[in-house]
Image (cartoon, rainbow, N blue to C red; front, side):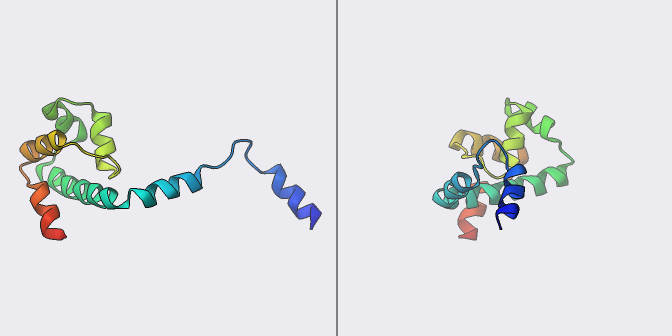
Length: 102
C-alpha cells in the first residue's frame, strides 16, 4: 500500500488543484451561468446563420474579440449594455428568448 501511495505522490502536481473552488463557484452562480450559456447558444446559432466571425461581431460591438470569445463560452456575466449591443448587431431578442424559456 505504501508503495502505491509513494508512486502516486511522484506524479502529484506541485501546485494544488483548484477543482473544488471552481465547482463551488459554478454551484453558487448556477442561475446566471444557465442564462449566460443559453445566450451563448443563441448567439452562436445566429452568427452561424449570418456567417459572422467573432472578430466581425467584436468590431461591430466596439469590443475585443477576446471579450466575444468569453461571452460565447457561456461564462460571462453580461451587462444590460452588452446584451443590448449583441441584440442590435445580431438582430435577435435575447431577453425575450430567455423569458420564454423560463
